[in-house]
Image (tube, rainbow over all chains, first blue to last red; front, side, top):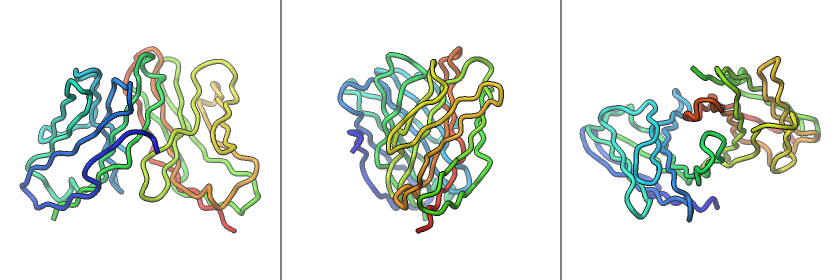
Length: 115
Length: 114
């Protein structure tokens, strides 16, 4: 158990809908990262937050947004969902005192199925 | 821009034999290199990382990796494979000089045959 929790574990929704994925980092970790894992795209970095502020942005669509709250939990919002958004969404956390050399600890993921 | 390549989609090894999972990278500065493992229906787990110092890095579950700067490689190795090592392995790189986001390879599926 990494100490990172994600809810829900599974999510089934329809095209055009909006969903929110939630992540609680390990105790003491200030950074939260979001990743999308699909069969054809592999593991794609979406976005990183550090202590409430956006730190780095990857291949995140404009239909997707995220935020990190004062208690350091994070939410990833996916809107106007398309079939191609079906994937496994991971959250990871790190202390992030040492930048790019930090080890990331991954949650179990949320499996999203868009029908 | 930084990149990482795992040239093999799948590697098959007999139990008890040594295993190697290959990784090559490209960064403009000096690299931080990582290996993560993903078991079925689980999140990724950290195995080991190279930051600086000794080129041979030892990690969890008996795995090790060797940093080779001239070949820009960071291959994952284990002297004797176990069936329980069967999983999806990801190599990742970040750029020390850019303090930038980490880039993951596409993953290599390792099958250990009993």
